[in-house]
Amino acid sequence: MKKCFVFCIVFLVFIGYLNAFPFANYGNIRVPDARVMPHLMGKISINNYMYPENNLKGDDFAYNWAGAVNIGILNYGEIGFVATGDEVYYAHLKGRILRETLTLPDIAIGLDNAFSTVSAKPNTKDYLDMIDEHNYRGNSMYVAISKTTLFTAFPEMGEIPARVTLGAGAHRFQGTVDFSEQFSGIFGALQFEPMRNLSTIFEIDGHNLNMGAEYSFNNNVSARVDLYRVEEWSRRDPKFALTLSYVFDHYVSPDERAVILPTPRTAAPGDPQIRDRRRETDEETLDELQRIRRQRERAERELEEIRRLLLEED
Image (cartoon, rainbow, N blue to C red):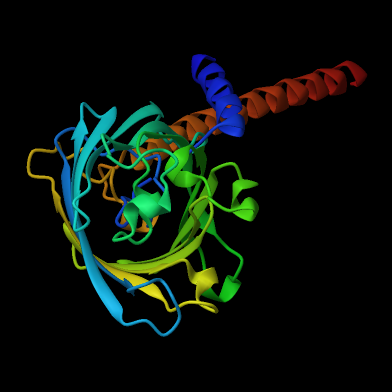
C-alpha cells in the first residue's frame, strides 16, 4: 500500500514537471534511466563527439570530448562527475524512489548539470565558441520511470528484451524553439536487445531525436555509437559520437552485481528481478497446490454424498 501511494504521488509530479547530460549518459544516450547502480559500483565513460564546426550544412567536422564517472551510493543513489572539452564541469545526482519488480517500474529523481556555469536560459551570444551550449544548462531537475519488458511484435524474432523510459525535466530537457517548447521537457527512450550483448536505443530527449547502438564485450567493457539530432540531418550535417565505457564492480556483492544490466537476457542469477520472479513463481505454485487440494476435498465430499444417497435408495 505504501509503495502504491508513493508511486501515485511521483506519477502526479511526473505529469507536470520533468528533465540529462550533453553527450554520454547511463543506460540511454541523453535520456536518464531510472535504474540506480548498486553500492560502490562505478562506471567510467569517455565520449568522442564529432559535429559540423559551425553547425551548418557543408561545414568541416570538429572534435570534442567528454569524460564522466558515476558511483552507486548505498543502493539508493548515484553521484557523477563530468568534464568536457568545452571546459564546462558539473555533477549529476540521482536518487531511487522505487526499485523495479515484475509489476512495478524503477522510479528515480535527479539533478543534472549541477554546478554548471551555463545558466538555465543561456544567451547564445555569450557562447559563440561553443556548439549546443544549451546541453550544459545548469541544475536540470528530472523524474524518470523505467520498466524492463519483453517485446513480441515480431513473432519470427521471438521475445526481445526491451527497456522503456519515460520522464520529464527542466532546463537541459526543454527545447529552445516554439515547437519543442510545447513538449515541456517530456522525454522518452526505447532500448531493445535483438541479440546477446547488442542493444539499440531510440530516444527523444525533450526536443531532439537520438539513436544509438551499444555492444558489450563483457560485463565490464562496452562501446556505443551515438547519432544526435537525427531529425535535423536534412538541413545540417550529422552529429555523432563513439562512447567507451568501463564498469568497476569488484566491491559489489554478487546479489547486486547484475543490477546495472538492462534486460532479462543479460541478467545474472543474482539479479533482484530474477529473485522476485522466483519468489512470485513459488507463491503461484503454492496457491495452485492449495486450489487443487480444495477441489479434491470438494470432489470427495460430493462422492461421499452420492454414495450416501445410493445406500439410502437400496
